[in-house]
Image (cartoon, one colour):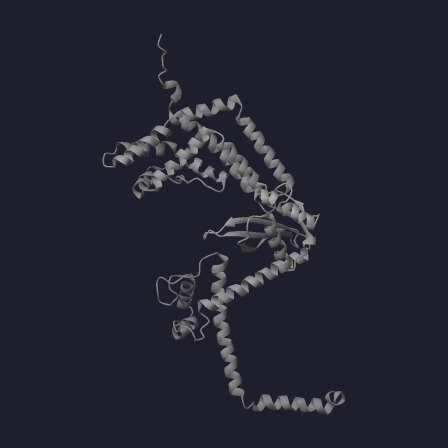
Amino acid sequence: MKEHENSDDHRYACAKLLARKNASGRVYKGLVIQMEEEIKYWQEILRRVMAVVRSLAVRGLPFRGSQEKFGLRNSGNYIMSLELLAEFDPFLNAHIKRHGNKGCGTTSYLSSKICDEIIDIMAKKVISTIVTEIKQAKYFSIFVDSTPHICHVEQLSFIVRYVSKKECPVERFIRFIPKCGHKAEDIVTIVLDTLKNYDLDIADCRGQSYDNASNMAGAYSDLKARIKEVNALVLFVSCSAHPLNLVGSCAAECCETSISFFSNLQALYNFFSISTHRWGILILRLKQNSKVLKSLSQTRWSARGDACKSLCVSWNEIMAVLKIITCDMSEKPSTRFEASGLLNHFDSLEMCFPTLLWNDVLERFNKVSKSLQSINIELSTIVKLYHSLVIYLEGIRKDSTFDLYELKSIGLNGEQNYAYDLKRKPKRKV
């Protein structure tokens, strides 16, 4: 058989057969052409659908609406994007008219089920690419943190850090793991199983980083220690931004004056934001391009700098609006009473002074916190940032700095004396 296949006669016969087939055609030539056209048609449809899915997924936009039908205004971003594309694409427009709302049992490649399958295929491809890059880099570090979902379900975020071929540090999110629990033994099992599922060897892990919770970075039986039992070469580095956030919040909460200041600052934002009428009056009085009032951040303490900044920059305008609302007899008595209370709190040297002080402190804290969250930051840079922040705060404690803030407060507020000095001192009966 081999001698026959390699012979000149057999090769000549095969060449004649191919020439005859191309010249005369085949019996099922029409079917082949029809099948190729059909394949090309659905490939073009899939190419457009995948482009829409990729664009929405990259930007983190929702896909679904209240109804998934073409021609409705309350359809989701997925249907809306296809309709928008169809306005300039006659091919897709004709396909939507022919197969758009036919329902189940009809092939259209436009349904939510196909969309979910495409998302799943893309996700697997992305994860596969990330895992390949990690294996090429060989050594990696892991980041793990748990946070409640909007549906009040605890989930664990799993992130891997490695060095790319261009010798640049890269951080990649791998997945969310729901119902992870809070115990260290449960979390370490999830971490090891996740690495095993993606065929990543824990022996190649060289770093781990978590927040300062006792189950993550405690002294003995935490996640850090349990990972080190599996691989002694895994170096633990605490999250640099999280301790800074804790130190700042705990330092502020130990002082009653600071607690009162931030409570009044949040109350001021609530007073204006709860009413569109009051918010409109405030916007009209603010300077052009100045920041509006901001709410206090509950999770990131350093982000409160935006709230202090908006009050510090627009102090006179905000006090003027409070006076207008207090004296406006067309307002409700409760509104005028609330505005009067806020005005009495803020239009004083006791509130103007901490506004200027916290504005500078939180602005510095916020900048340092953002720098600490950079991907390219090094440990030596972290130490320098901490050291510079300590020096800055120690400089504020000097008497000369206090006098400087006091002069700024008097110049901004116009009040010369503290409320304590203006109080009538009680006289003891003789």
